[in-house]
Length: 453
Image (cartoon, rainbow, N blue to C red; front, side, top):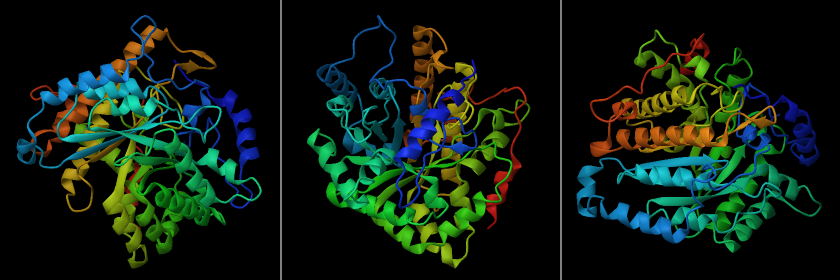
């Protein structure tokens, strides 16, 4: 079960180059580039996004009314609001990028819902027009209950193409995004938007790239009246050389004007730090060693900024308030989201230990890492070399098991009294989900170098 996206890469790269804006040279990453941590492969599969990938014959898409009825029953069983301050020491916000399957994701989160958490679910734009919203889908997510919130996807590549037309600007694009999606019902009070994605030209300081991004995000924030979420492109955990990447981060973190602008526009800085199962699942390592190595990668920009000079203090202060790693629940992939092309059972263990690692990191650094914040990319993929990887019902049941494990891991680790990282490994008294056995797995020591500037 290996997924090969290279066939698609050439055609996709040509399309993206044609869409690039001349003023900052933006080109999204090729589909099969294994060295990049990016959302791009979700679009490279050629799958049409759908609200639910439940197997045929297992029922139609639920109506908003049926989802709302279920939500009312769930809410009725929750502790009373008066009990929550003691019950939930730290309220959690759980963020999800979705390429597809957003309603089923919400349903499984609802089935494992914690009164100590709010869930934020992005909805992608139309496949044929990355500036156009999927009308009515936001109603289905809202119907899951008052703890479920819609994020409108601000697709950079789509809007970059839009503003490359004569007479248009990044600021016009940000404002038009809000107008277009609000017209469809999105961005209601209390909701937000999520940028897909803060591209690598920003980190590399391509001329014009940072200025364009600031204009774009300023306009989206001003028009919507709310700060957004940013998914930030990164590099793969398996990288063998950070001699370019680390200095780029160091230069970027000293650009105080950029980070001041982000403080005005972006409330959640979601670093795309998708771990790779080949660099996690060392079978003879302890859970402590596995999660320590996970955290070195998941948190590496924050760790680097913490050890930076005074010139990086604006970035450091901002990241301490907003940083969260966007971890990987994307299955199965060999690029972009880390290599997750292993069994569904191993993937359940992988999401459990990622949850454990994020929670453990925040508990060990209560003053420098947001405790109540976690994020995952949900991008199920059943395309292998242009054909289905497995029977649709097998795929639906396998991804359902992954969803349920993820929802339970989040609930149990962000539950009573602020929760314990052990909750990610299973319900109290049963911690069987935090173990691993990936043939040939080995840790990558390079990520420990981000502990020093």
